Length: 373
Image (cartoon, rainbow, N blue to C red; front, top):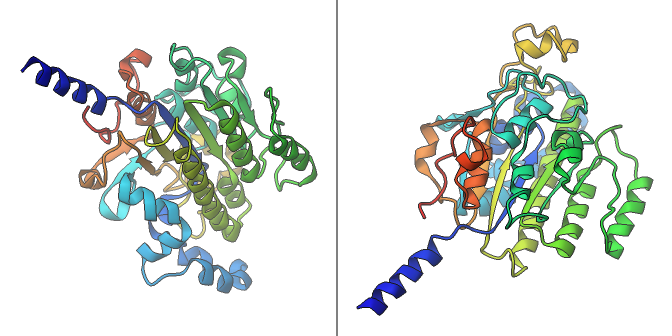
């Protein structure tokens, strides 16, 4: 009888153990509309996209919103939606938004990574973040020390994660890979990055961010990986809806390749949780889709958008997707709930088996997507 009890207890401990690894991915400014509905006709029908419309419709069309979104982001809808959970489909009453008062990137990333909005972070200037992110905190925990890494397309991430204070390995913007033992592929990416022009002065193409992430994983096997993709936001600011769509499609492919790589490695296979989300939304009309700003922001840092005195409707609306051994599958109850970006940090910490209150007591509560252990 004692042996049976002991065996049962062991089984409980084994099945209730949290996954050891976490990958957090952000896709800058990707709207919930495209994620849940596919390309938007009101935007694609604009005169400026007339010559490209036929090719885009051929690539991403479908007979319904479900089929259109599946073509745009096949990994998200063919794999993650079946094995995990998605939040933010407002057509079904599922709502998620930011809590910060600005609705643009640095305030959003701070909220995402620290679990609370900071009213003093009111610009995108590369000022070192006074707040401690979950990445920095996790790196101080004995089982994760030296096992946390971040990769971003935007060159402000070293400041957002405060590399000076945190000491975390961060590769962002146009930085070269500089870790010991660089693979031939990483060295090639270093060279190629100097030869391929980016459309922007402070954001590199996501292919380099993905490539460096992959090479670092193969060499160092970090337990916590943050990947911040940026093309969608920057193409949107250019008013380039075709490339915004292709950027979303590429992001989905990068995540799929990353997930396949992790599942092929013993450390990560069936031992990794994945979270995908964004830092802010965008305008909800064909006239405003390329912008994002709150009423407070247009009176301050984003005063170039002062024609939107009341802010840009929809720019605070976001979404989230997650899957893994500790994430509930197809949580129907999420569809009529209201969640916020400040809940992601606590969710990530709890998915790794920590009490989120150990990190901070004044942050958003974990999202109810975690399986009972």
